[in-house]
Length: 117
Length: 498
Image (cartoon, rainbow over all chains, first blue to last red; front, side, top):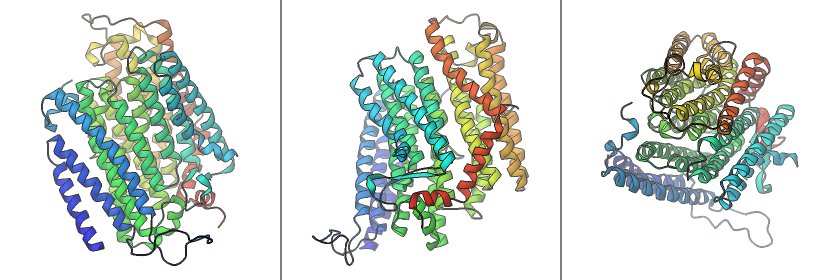
């Protein structure tokens, strides 16, 4: 399972970086999506996947007993997914605006802020 | 009860944004609420700084989950000072904006986003938890996205595309590094990680250091990943540019200082050598960029990069003198850089442009502004007895002490070039006669002039005070450096007696 997830992470990150090297803005954003999903998967894998019991404290007890799965890495990813989603929406609207303004989605044409004196 | 003081600088602006949203239709109320929040922030952060100075590092465990399990907020000398300076700049900027931006339709949104941004910045300074640090970085980033596209003309949109994408890559790298570190140690608490990091293999620690270094380098605009900064900062209105210039890159530097002293000490590793080389190149490329630009904001934007190089020297050398100099530099730089942008904004308003060739004769027409410009400009260049001299002195002395002669020589050479580009502004804008063909922009009322000049004057005064009475400030920075190099007090404050 670890090996499979690691391979998927590697593929997502590789595809993400490849897309981010493109000049078309939308492809860069697709690359961003793949990259952030790859990284989320990496966190999940690094957080020690296991087939242990759910981390639920039995009635009457005060602590967990025996071995149990780690829930925290999922909580971390959930936060990261939500943040990533919000940021993505902002990026999409920014892209929409930029493409509307400059009539092209080529990142090389978006140089108004760096041109001339 | 007093430990709540640690979290007030974060909670208060966050609650403030709620009120600012409610009153978004009423410019005057928005201004009043925004000023009140910032004033309160200055008071609270000064109290916090005083308390930390007297009692040593403080910590509070949120939700009564004891460290290292819950999220901890902690303040040591460095973070308390950073929070205090942040609020000082925040107050200065919201007062200044009342003159600079009040006619903009986006004025209420400006205040809302500014306080959201300050929430993120203060959160990043005060948190003692690694994942929480990531969240505060995101808060800061989202708020800065909003501020960057506030007026959304094409220039700003083009600038912010670069800013947004490069910063997102940096944040994703940070997230990856945090995830891997958590996977290896099962811990996110900074103080807890301090004692756990030795259980990891050196190769893995080196990999993590590389990831963190890359991420924070983008945030703090180090060579060669600073491209987003000169592409975007000069498109912003002066109030926003001043806040960004003062604070945003410095949060990256602060995070670097925190991680590389507390969690991943990098003394003697390959990363230390890399950071020393990078700091030199950052100084040099930044100042060369500044020397080749001809609008005030572009010149000042490149100077941020060059000054970041100076601050990083202190961290890279990793000695007591170096770190103390670096902390002093950090504080001095935030104040001076924000102030220069504020002055640039005032001149921009006076002349209707910030291109050097469109301005002139300010020394004759507005001698007070000329003096107010000279103070931070000379301080930036490192003239005694202003604040920049002492911080530069400490950093360069540290590099000579550790035998990095080339680095010290580069720093001095960059200082000369800094003077050159400041003189370029001085000659064109203040000394030479005003261009005759200049169209006269709308005049500035007396009330507006006061709102412009009061924050500028106060920041300039602080620059002089740090310069003339450098000893207590240096002592403070020195103690902060000692606490960074040997974080026993920080760890004890967070984890309790163990």
